[in-house]
Length: 267
View 1 (cartoon, rainbow, N blue to C red):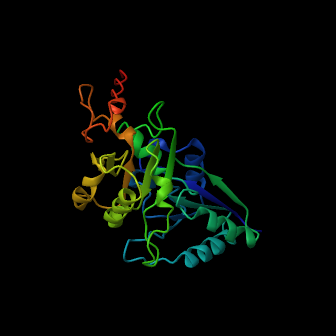
View 2 (cartoon, helix red, strand yellow):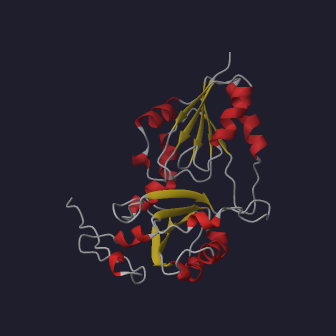
View 3 (cartoon, one colour):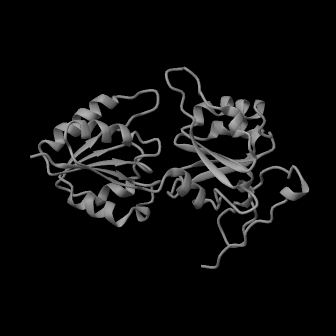
């Protein structure tokens, strides 16, 4: 009889942001297949008797093909009752969880999806950037910044020029210059506030805000995984501490754009 595969989102890194369901399943797992971006603080929550498989993909040096991961999950499900597929962020937000679900379903393997806090939500919240805000941003888009097979990013760049839409690019470090150039060429103001966030919610968290046109100059000091957030909501960010000032992000384009930062909430 086949076991069940649980596609679990590990969130942006802080183990306290895991769902109760995720923690319970990690403690009961018979086998775990783990991605590279799962926070180190989450690993001790895994059942110590579980069979552990590290299938992390390193940029520029991937050792684990997706087809191999599919086959591993299938083999484990045929020999274990509870198989956890542990992914950073959320399994269905640039996590290839949909591909794994469809593959397992074709082979008759039951799958349960346990959502996680995706990096855009977790990392933006950690530095005080609301992805939407009344009168500032009415929508948000999550976009891959990863080039596939050197084919370039095939995006509808003109649709990303709307100043009322916050943009969050995942896996964008290597291609920030190309992304910024395309955004500006297709109508996004080069003075739009933007932020780079690395290691959000973890002890290695680091971020910097600047006008969009300056982002390619500062990205060299950031390592993957780093998010690029673009939009006027970045002006609302605050650095840590009750007396912190808003993060610098360029001058407002219009008088109506002079947004007052939110007051910090008392602990």
